[in-house]
Image 1 (spheres, rainbow, N blue to C red):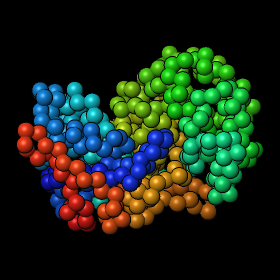
Image 2: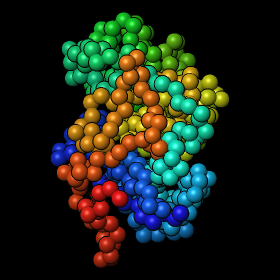
Image 3: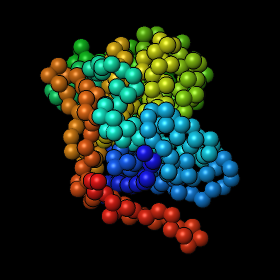
Image 4: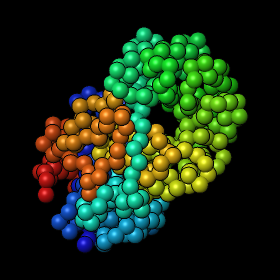
Length: 396
């Protein structure tokens, strides 16, 4: 079968706020081939990603992504890898290409799984998936009292682990941050797994990050996530040498296998967090999972959007028993909730499972997404390159 169509759907909340919440807008990708459809989601700004798909050719290594995808044969998993390599070669100088390719790659795996009547994790070579321990992923409150309440709510909801991120952390004093860490620990309880995410707030400044270590140790945090920018390998390594039992986590900002490989090899991180919607899709994320396993670094999914993206993020490490933790967003905007008819819930033991249904196992909720569609046209020299496909957001 050949890829007949790729439809891109820009979705957004009526108001997008200036907060660290990636579920406020979305770019969904639908790929059609041989009477089947597959869905993917890009974890990226929708408009430049759409532009990368339709942009006029700039030169031989800067072609529109559409030129490498439309009309391609899709018969097996080798074809997915071949298409990904073609995009990377033909759009080498198009820096948005990894984000756009991510959604396409995810959709290709979903489509092929449906075609072959197999879940994606099985196509990846795993005989069965292992349950994952979800951590309730949320933002810090604006005050320690608000952070405390969030931790208590997560505990009441049955989560044995929680991550608090962004918000005011790193923007005030060391003592103010410590108050939030204490509140998070108190809310989650003494036996919960506490994870802290500071959203690259210190860029590459080890001396600003290091004073927070004593409070993190006192609260028995398991990891400190993204204290620095993704490429600040020297800063990561320097802080890791001072962090003792507290491990560093990073990787959501990587958009190639090699970026993730360098974090694993040179930054002394304990956890590599990969977003299938950013790094180039499930194909590249699976490569990273295998490499991390060989290097003794724990793989963790990254996702903060819909359950379509959650399913995609689970596939690359579904069959790795020792890599237990799973990011599970609990503060989703209505848009993200509306993406799918079904969801990935917690089982009676508080664990989550990669879906067993064919493909990603998720059903896109076409009707619920209609109110969130953003009306966009892209024209160059009078030629229409993209228009919001309002008439095509429907089941095949």
